[in-house]
Amino acid sequence: MELWPAIDLRGGKCVRLLQGDYARETVFGDDPVAMARQFVAAGARRLHIVDLDGAKAGEPVQIALIERMAQAAGVPCQVGGGIRTLETARCYAAAGISRIVVGSIAIEEPALLEAMAAALPGTIVLGLDARDGNVAVRGWVETSPLTALAVARRCEHLPLAALVYTDIATDGTLGGPNISALEEMIRAVKLPVVASGGISNAADLARVARIGAAGCIVGRALYDGGLTLAAAAAACGEAPA
Image (cartoon, rainbow, N blue to C red; front, top):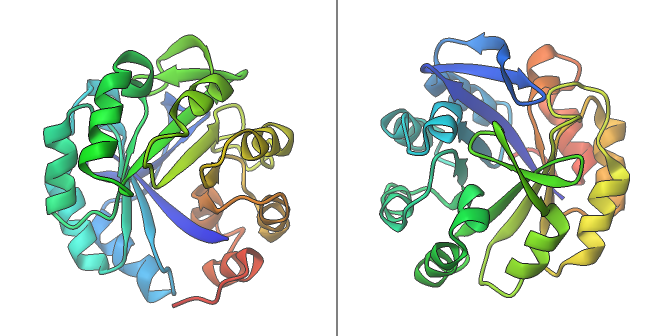
């Protein structure tokens, strides 16, 4: 299972939100480029980067910073937040970003998602953030009447790289992942599923790996010191780089 250390950006800083709430933010670093280098120096094989300001604004806000982070890291980077046009996706791809996460357009403009996947096959990742089973959009400030499972099934025929499934109730809580919902998603679709939300320790990662997730995004546990990168990699079954 692939380990994706997460760096969430807001106002040019490394932060984590509790359950996606912008009012409940913890700042973990003032230099995201240094944070990217630090993860890679510790053995990270890849990074998951989110432009939280972009997710809320509906367009990239920190693209220049993200490009610098990717260049400094020198490992595959997966980026999400405010990517709602094909032009933006192409810009990130041209800048060397390996995988591009889109979410809101799967609900609001499914034809655009199809166009993105066709133009950049194997690069686009469908990001589904679920609140009580329904998909949250626009930086998690709105909730769609569509379920995450329904959207996933509708999109699984596309040439996507993967599906990132985030359970908002557990995100940033260190309370453990929503295994039942995650397992339901893994069984429902053919796409590789990357889990996100609630990871607190190596045992959580091992549980996620056992049910067949292709990858897992880990954030707060790595920053709080409750989980080392080496221990996380071992639980995923991959050695640090």
